[in-house]
Length: 173
Image 1 (cartoon, rainbow, N blue to C red):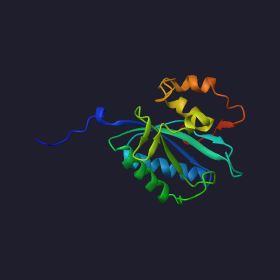
Image 2: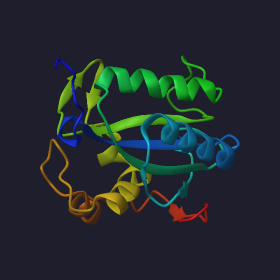
Image 3: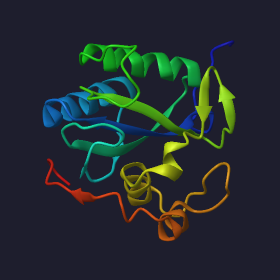
């Protein structure tokens, strides 16, 4: 008695965005391995290459990973920061700069607003093809928590004509 049994219903559905433009393939693979070690099986989108946004730099590899976790948003954010740090990420970098590994929480269930210091859903979903396209690959009919519009419809109606994006061969995708 008194033991808590974790059920799938008590787990949050999370989508994460991963990106790297420094030793991209190594850092993305290693970052995914760290996430699998921490959370178990992941749903993983194809990997996309895109030009750097907001600064002059090497092209990025980007993808979206889906997972389930019983961690709170704050605990998850702390875990992701540790994984980034283990990959050479230095906090306090300029917002638009090269990254060894960047992992952002895009959504956590249907949370909207600031949760444990994290703004949800992440606004980059609606701003960048390199976030929305891989999210559509994983969950095309899921609804954006704030707009209540499917990710597929958001992509179809977005104007990302100035954002070049292409799938790259990467592992099993």
